[in-house]
Length: 410
Image (tube, rainbow, N blue to C red; front, top):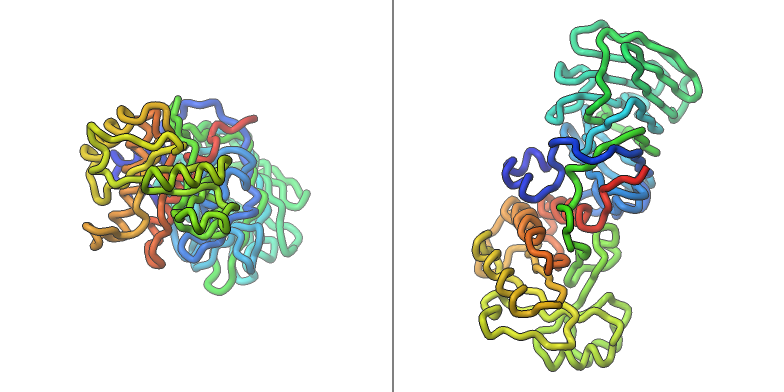
């Protein structure tokens, strides 16, 4: 989805989900789809990636069709897709010959795994821009498709779910389904050096499910933080911890001293003046205290309370150059402090007319900036309005980059 929403220049600057060059050593990948927060806006697709995948932060993009959910309470611990033709793409390419997954096709539909050298496909098995399409139906029927080649049909014993392994070997496909193996001659050899993986399903009435996805080798170079990046916190201000637990590691509240005793279980506090910073730090020495100011306060005379662990600022609707100048000034004025950029998740005065698309772009703009300043260690964002799905997805993607380690360990 991200590749359709932003310009190439913005994507490169933000260093997220960009189909680009393969520079890092590939390594195994897995996703068990467990533990994601199934939110009303993002449906858990890119939530809790580090835990789901064991390591890494490889995001997914919906590229075609209907609804996509992860860890839906009705279908826990799975990727579920519903719609006449629905597909998602992994945002990092496979660089090895083998892919496996547990597929549960809808009774009246199908599930698919599609491999393509193109990152811009809609992922349908019949597309001309794919290299290999695999389709499985609930009755056990199997189809292998390649552009311009006759469809190869086969079948296995019908079951509710199917453990599927595809292994490319020269001009042949080694296919194993629930322990049944067959070697299928391909009309055209499929190169395994760099293939984008699409998972799909088709049914107008019932969701098709994917679980236990494993890829023998995956290159996640394009999803990594910039070398030497100091970013390590993705936090929320005023969010309910349960709603953001999979994409946040620093949930703060802004509270006066009289309220603090009742809220000692939070990660820390946002304060707006030196007296409150001193009182909160004295009472909760183990909690993080972040001193937050409006951007114009960061000038040549700016000082931060010694008791503050970090300093953050907000400057709503500011452009790149204005934010960059403010960040440079803050780093100059408070050396040694952890610095945070406050990113609006909802329209704020004086730009209350900002749209979902505007704020989506803001998330990536701030990421690109923060990666240029080592003193900045993270973001504090606010929850999004109930209709701002694009902004919510952008927050999850940025959090995946900040919190995950996309250097997959093999």
